[in-house]
Length: 157
Image (cartoon, rainbow, N blue to C red; front, side, top):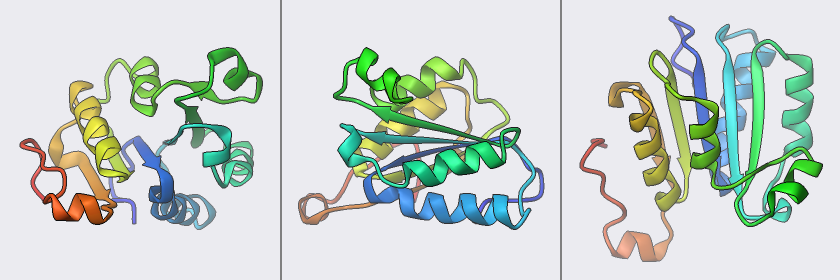
């Protein structure tokens, strides 16, 4: 659930199945009026085929244009092709950096594969978001678990 109270602007970064908990929080916040601050969702994928729920998030963006922004990002699709379908081209962290020179005063939520989570943490902190305002979840596969997972010296679990 979103950390309500201050209704700080929220930036969410999701990859793969990490989108599921973000979708639940977004729907709860918007459809139940549980959060009044702006929410931006960055969904990262390699190609269009790797994205899901695009229509849902575009509909929510249309229904809540002053509160919700959806930024699907394709890392392996040329910019002209991606933009023709309404997607950003590049890694989700690169698109986030281009959109936000600073994230001071925001809350960050990150969920997805460990490598993406680690890159997102570095990006968020590089944009002046304090670790106390970043909430994350890594989805480990068996190889990640066997190797002890990804460890960040910056964020404690």
